[in-house]
Amino acid sequence: MKVVIIGGVAAGMSAASKLKRLLKDQAEIVVYEKGEEVSYGACGIPFYISDHIRQGSELIARTAEEFAKSGIPVKTWHEVTSVDTEKKTVTVKDLKSGQVFTDTYDKLVVGSGAGVRHFPPFDQEYENLYEIRNVSDGTRVKTALLEEKTKHVVIVGAGFIGLEVSEACRRYGKDVTVVELADHILPAFDTEVSQALEEELAKNGVTVRTKTMVKELVSEGGIIKAVRIECKGEDGQAATQEIPADMLINSAGIAPSTDFIQNVEKDRNGA
Image (cartoon, rainbow, N blue to C red; front, side, top):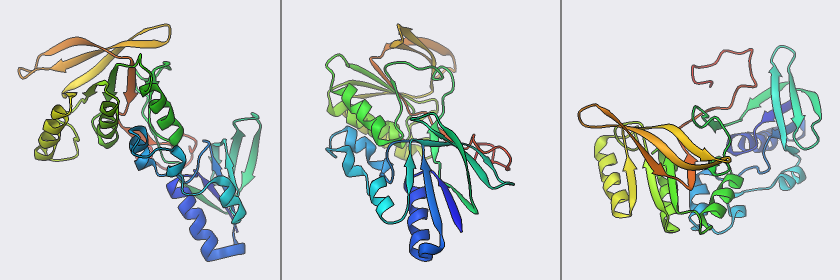
């Protein structure tokens, strides 16, 4: 039996390891991962940024080379661009060489995870626009925070990642503003929890702007200079304001990375 696994992080590599333990040589396993790293602890990335975890390599449980030695070949920098569930084939692009090829499978495991939603105005590339999905992203953010010119950091989204990153940025002495569209931070939690956390953030110098939407990114030469926000007051009236931004981190929600699968039924969010 041949098993193709799409995605080499927690779900994909856990499935690969379990299959190898249970079926041994009865299963031929190949993992396609479009990034460079596999089997890393994504939840630890904010603590790597804050320097609680010193090296990004400490977040990686096993490397692709180590998996290969145990009989699980992992093809990094290989992106699955489409799936044909009737023919049981996947189309794969080698992101380094540009080569495109087709592979077959008997069983398919989709562990492609989720990606940051690139809705306007975050649908363009800027030199100082960041998102945090893997260890490399964490390294980019950490490097930027070490630069003296980075003084004002704006974080869009007050979920787990956004708030953990705000703490990390404050450890570097940066001016940090968290912008959240909902009426309180951590929208999935009760207001009592959110209120306590907002007070703690304020004590630690983090500015929190709830009921606030990012309307526009003011840029120059591909570099964001300021963020134009629209906030609703107690009277329900909207007011526009501009805040400086040397660094913008988009943490405003994620969506399943499943665009490469077209001929199966999906949930509204893409799952």
